[in-house]
Length: 352
Ligand SMILES: [Zn+2]
Ligand SMILES: [Zn+2]
Image (cartoon, rainbow, N blue to C red; front, side, top):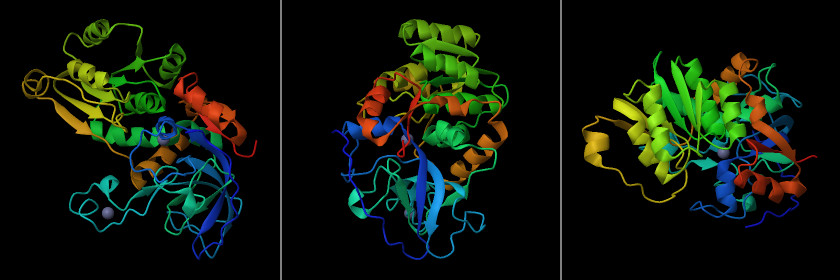
């Protein structure tokens, strides 16, 4: 479904509400799925753009960041796109899986435009009371933050789920923002060797700059990719394999790349792309393989992403993932470029 421009009136803010003046938002893989209508339960029409950064335009009453510091107009902010997580349900409490809270909503994805400015492909974004807001660290530019974007938040969660320990060999399937950021963080988490599998070559080159040691292109056949991973791991397979590709074929390939007793973290299947076929005896049971899903992100991942950007922005070229800017009138072109994987990531500058 094509994206069209609509004008909205500025909302009357409730006490504790605020408006963000958007500096940059992004086009991520989820936005391409939304554009194709491949996500279930989306309350169209929506304003896409779930991870977004900008300055505080105005607030009604006192607005504090997550650490309790009072915010002022003009402060450079990021906000956590997930809101209304209830903190009371089974998922939030007993199961400790707040990303599975049924009340949870996400800016730009599960918030309808009929309710207001809940998305970043807009000059201003409504921050409803209770949304977690953080000041960007002084050194972190808008470009740094949005270059990592939702992929960085997801990869912080992936690293937590992967339980990587120093010296581990890590395979990352997929060279999008999630895959590249996961390669970077796996390196910083102490991985001994990081191997990224993906395409096109420009993303593989950037993966190397982000921290990968080896890259394998999708022009190499699946059999040869597996043989290459085995050769790079002394014939035993990787300690940790991360799926950030979103293909049922990647899952079939990834279980074969993990070593006996290794771990496989699945983060790329945000939409249902169909069934995979694996042999439970050969690839899970006998292999003693640990398979872990990784859904969404939590406030802690958002805040750690800011710390990571602050500490490593000079070393890891997060900003280079955000390759090109598009204005609101160029959004359909931005989506086409993103769908074709022509550049690492398209950015949205709604004021250009
Ligand atoms: Zn995203
Ligand atoms: Zn809940």
